[in-house]
Amino acid sequence: MLIDCAGVAGGSSFSGTACDDGDPSTGDDQWTSDCECVGLVIDCLGIPGGPAQIGTPCNDGSIFTGNDQWTSTCECEGLLIDCEGVPGGPALTGVPCDDGDPVTVNDTWSDGCDCVGLTPDCVGIPGGPALPGTPCDDGNNATGNDTYSVDCACAGLVIDCLGTPGGPALPGSVCDDENPDTGNDGWTSGCICTGEAYDCAGVPGGLALPGTPCDDGNPNTVTDTWTSNCTCVGQPLDCVGVVNGTAFVDGCGVCAGGTTGIPPNPDGDNDLALDCLDNCPDLFNMDQADFDVDGIGNLCDNCPWIANPGQEDDNLNGVGNVCDEVGIGEVAAAPLLHALPNPTLGFIRLSSIPSDAREVLVLDPLGALRQRMPTATVLDLSGLAQGTYTLVLVDATMRPLGRVRVVRF
Image (cartoon, rainbow, N blue to C red; front, side, top):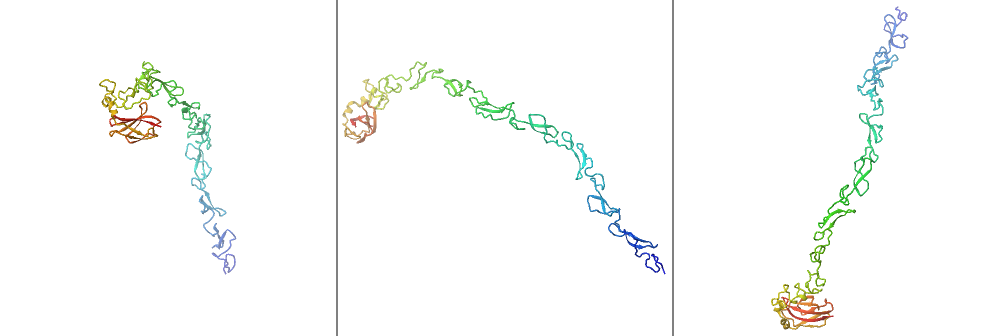
């Protein structure tokens, strides 16, 4: 009988049959052809004779590692990929590098694998706070809001006259001195808001000052100057051109008085009517009565009842031609007028009115015309004051046709 690998005659432990090599790290133990009980090494995945052996590649499932291998304890571990993409490389976060920028220093790999250096600030400190745009002190008390410029120059804004850094209220700029009597207000070099006084023409700092020449717009004055209250006043010329003279144009339109030697406003008859306006300049007639309205007063009219402004008197009898032609007899021959009631309170009735009568003239005792009305049988005299009046009827040529005296009471 055959003796098997276990030394048993007729046993079953022959080559290729299962056995136990007593090694827990192996599996699928079998008798070899030379009767050695040998198993297959169990790999890291628990498979006897499997490929996942210590030191062989694996995948630890992390994107941040590379060259993953099974360890002696069957853990799949990789090497950390550095910032240059090398598994297990030295280019790790915080490790020095070179960012290629000559301006920066202390270059290191960042958490995001960027090679970043620190920029020296404006005082030379790498990564320091003194960067362009940050506050600084330029040591100048006349500036404020000092900051570093892009070229690391510490510069401030000029403090204006109102204390505002970079403000617009600078010497020479516009301001308001709150004085209504000045204009063109501006800041001085000493930051005082000062304006120029308005001159008499309203111009700030102008030349139209009291005592200086001006033009008052009056052609009858000379040497015009501004007064202390800014009124342009000249010295008057009288009507003959004398400065401050006393000659003047009188009521007759004549330059009189002063140096002219002409008495002003002559009134030869002293009736208060200037000779140039007096209708009877040589006779006193204050009422200037002119019955026939020919411009010649009754007192000096050579025909007071009929208008004859030329005072023609061919026969030199003192009676105007027109009155010579009418004749006193013609008036006397006219029909007698009758007026009732007479005296009257206002209304009066006329009778014996000539057919060619056109108007009734109402004269007061001095011959002044007080009323004029068309010829009618009934006349209204209620508008007259109490007194005695003469009614004269005239034709179209103002020739008297008759008269009657009435009393209004």
